[in-house]
Length: 151
Image 1 (cartoon, rainbow, N blue to C red):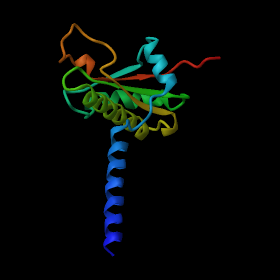
Image 2 (image 1 turned 180 degrees about the horizontal axis):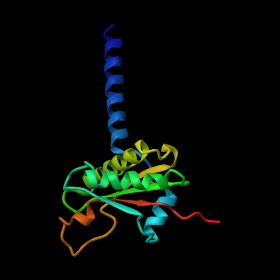
Image 3 (image 1 turned 90 degrees about the vertical axis):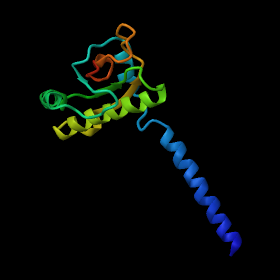
């Protein structure tokens, strides 16, 4: 009986460690096509800006996202690439940027864009440094890209 309890405790501890390791990995893997479009400098069709440390989408941006959804629902892929300013540590900023991208993707999905074409990813602090100021709103954003199809 005691051995069985010990095995149960070990199994629970192992599950907790595995769950912690899973939580440390990004919720969604980067998408090569979205990443390539962003790094190639493809212009965003829309940028959604956020307050410091927040993932809430403002009403004006919700209206813009709903307008964009009318076109985006016919796309092969819609990339929502989250970014953060340089406040806080890099890991926190990567996760915050991903949560912002997921929030934008959710609004697009609710507006009719098929979830199968939506890709939410995080650039963390990777793009756009504006004058060395770590608190610039332009860095707290999600860029929405519609990658060009290669034919």
